[in-house]
Amino acid sequence: MDEDESLRLYGLHPVGTDLDEVRELLRGQTERERRSQGAGDTELMKLCCVQLFNAGVIDDVLLIWSAKTASMDAACSIDVQLLCGRGLTETKAYLSLLRTPEAEAALQRLLECEEAGDFEGFRVEEYSAQYADYYE
Image (cartoon, rainbow, N blue to C red; front, side, top):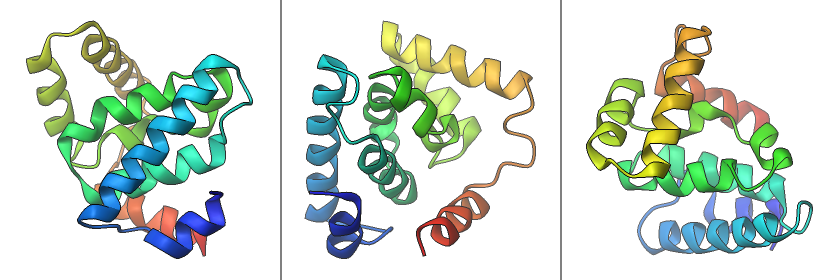
């Protein structure tokens, strides 16, 4: 599946079982990319992350983080803001409760980006609208 097909099948706001399919698609592409940079489709990975961001399910944060950290290309393609579909404050609180190495790494990155100003004026609705414009 490519980016265009995923957009046709799921749109930018998938629900129900479509979300499960987006998660599986992202897991598969992430595994490929982690094995060998360029083996996964980082544009498709980014779209999956946007779709999950739009769903706002807090449990998807580490899946998105895993995709972002799969390779240098993925890190550049997937914005750190996509971790925060439920909001920055909620995401930081969630990650701090998990107490796993992955959650701590993601939280540290969010804090660094926040300190650098990457979240100034960040609002979930506006960020979602920017991606809607991007994919039109």
